[in-house]
Image (cartoon, rainbow, N blue to C red; front, side, top):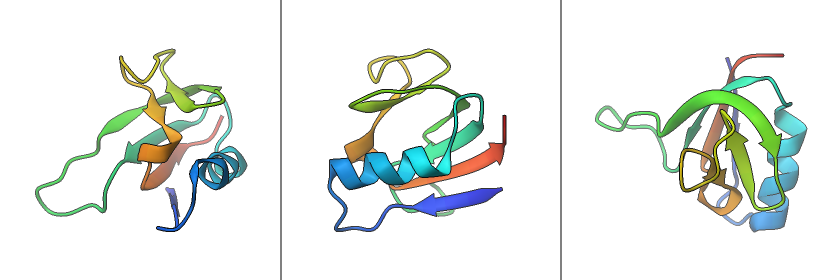
Length: 82
């Protein structure tokens, strides 16, 4: 598993660039919106199906249904590469 932690001072454009450099469509990922703790579970796990302008599409879903907005990402862990 490979982790990408977004720097705290990264804006949305920088976060989008970092995520796009780290994952590809077809990768299976875990996305968290805050640092992992013992009682904090993974926020979203699934297959990257799109690298949209405003969000990371997971399992074909928009942010309202399971995708994640770039400005909400703290860590992306790649579980399996395409």
